[in-house]
Picture 1 (cartoon, helix red, strand yellow):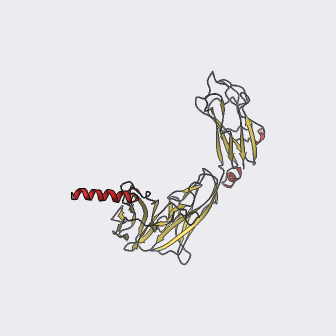
Picture 2 (tube, rainbow, N blue to C red):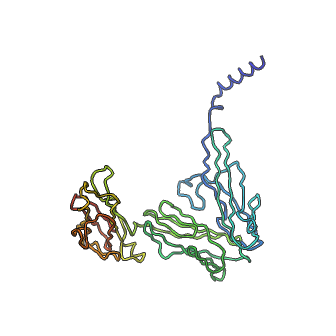
Picture 3 (cartoon, one colour):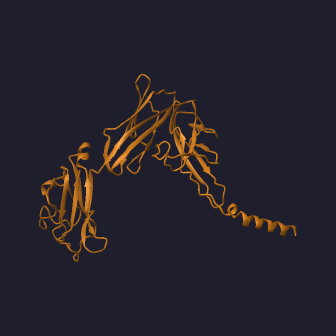
Length: 365
């Protein structure tokens, strides 16, 4: 009887307070983890306390978040766990205190778990890494600068950042370009991009333009417990090279130019030391056969509305229209392989294939 009474009471409570039992919190908003400092250099025997911070996905106060703080700070119930990849170089305590043991490098990895505490809300674990460079003796720095040969790059074109650390007298402590390090090896800073969809940056400071737009690259390092950051603005333009494929239409009928509209930047090409933008017209393997239109004898040509704009490249020495000569000539129909042309003057250039009327356009910036 007592069991029955208890069951009825529970059922009654459930009926009156169903939200207590059925409401399930949203999954964790734990988006990113940062261990700071992002990169560090210590002399043998020096110690440094790290900090671990959890972030949501932002935005931050209605604006874009900083690369170093990729969201709004959140609190998670987990406790950070630390480990060193080489305890003969670097040791780290359970509370994140780093101690430099011997010269060399090692990574300290911090992980943190968010446990919502409900069966239907899975836990989320994030991790972040700081590379620790240990020098034989402590190094002192006063300033960090970030430079490059240019502050614009064409999409798809890499550029290399130069990181320079100086001491209080202005003397260079360390200068690093990509994988080359000179001076006292205090290690590399960690690099961040404010907009990876526009430009990414590798761990060695090589910036890669992804698509036109602007981004800011940030470098951060702690040397002997002194935190230093530097930024470099980058503008990504249209690419300085491009390829137009001569291929079968996705519908399975007809041969066409793909894409039929392409944008390249001759202006940026000249900034990067090239003569202009190079556009390659390439035949996709298996495009032509005896039954296609055009067929495997006629193949394809590229006839420019302004042939004079299609200048010769060093690869072939050919300029103007492509594939308009007869079979066996110096400029035969384009049946396989590729042909490239150089464009140095901004403008819009149209082209076509005279056999089947396929058309395309090229915008040169």
